[in-house]
Image (cartoon, rainbow, N blue to C red; front, side, top):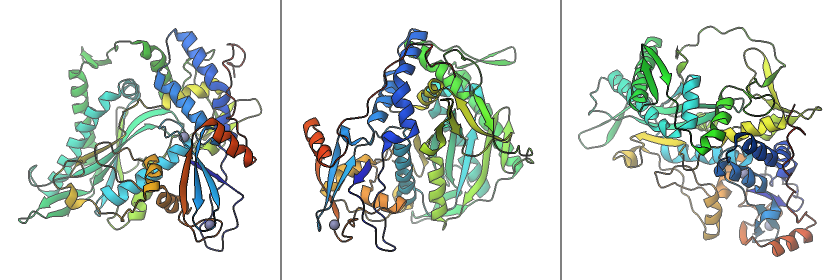
Length: 501
Ligand SMILES: [Zn+2]
Ligand SMILES: [Zn+2]
């Protein structure tokens, strides 16, 4: 949700600030989607003769309504001074909405630190895949689960060995974030596993005792990656996805459904930094170099590379360093895009700024607006694809789970806040999600306070109404001098008008 209020009063020194007045319809990303989404959908469908999947079209629609007061809002009021504030509804989508992505990141990271990850050292294990497998997992996301199971057997086995324990003597635990994109908003499905850096061993009285392990050596890491690859290849071959013939391995041609004809080219292009449809189809996305090329750095330690696979395990967070743990959780749950990174140049092309320049000095990718829409579409995950998974003692039904997870701060929800807290549910589908009230979350992350009115500083803001009906919306917004009409949508334009860069 985005908030808008009367002109905020200056907060007294040191007091948390009032919300910024946020106008999503004025961001470059919003304007691009507003102007080009309809054309993108129409042209993709015309050029493939197939319908773009509904979940992708719905994502564009929902994004255009996200944070727009004219589509409905909550009305908040200070119990002390009567100060009013309006809070627009958000789209809560997982594809490319920067504000919902940022809020989900904060919520998820806070949840993991407060309620999931025990106070023990944690090591991040990152598995990246070769490009053909990224394309495969984008097209068949159900394969992510068995791939992850392979990883979550190999790493705990290693930890048990290192602790000198048999499989039935100790229990590991991990949380995996399935990241679907890279720094260039390219589709790059890879796994970030936060693995407890040791194992729990139950004492006679049943109380689990954490046994720390040492840092893996580069040789061990290399051997672990080799095991992962061998098991993945076996698994994918057994599932008929890979075909082994005369010592060569091929990807099997999948059954092409209606959906696959539009989706697969989009995904494949987004994986390889190419353009899916239109006059430049198949070409590489243009890049801008604004930074000095870096020397190819010496081989990183604690990073194994084999045949396009890589396993990275250099990041470890100490048990007491919960702040750094939360930063790491935020990093791995960050959204694909932020508003600041999307710009339009004088020629009307989209310039997407990279989070960090590539080694060759590339700082920006340059695309036509419709090519950019292709990139956005590829980022949208299939509905019901769970991007966070819990393993071992952290699995929702694990016997030891209640004994090891942190208890977290007490959450006291008021009935009026429950609806708002609902907004920020974490994707912890398997477990009962602990919800954090919006008020507490905003305070925690942005240092914004809903418990102290920005006007008088004393009262607490309460939700007094949800405004959803057009006539009421119009009446209130007009009264406040705000635009009562939703921003207009751009219509689909004919091919040739603006497809070329
Ligand atoms: Zn949104
Ligand atoms: Zn007040």
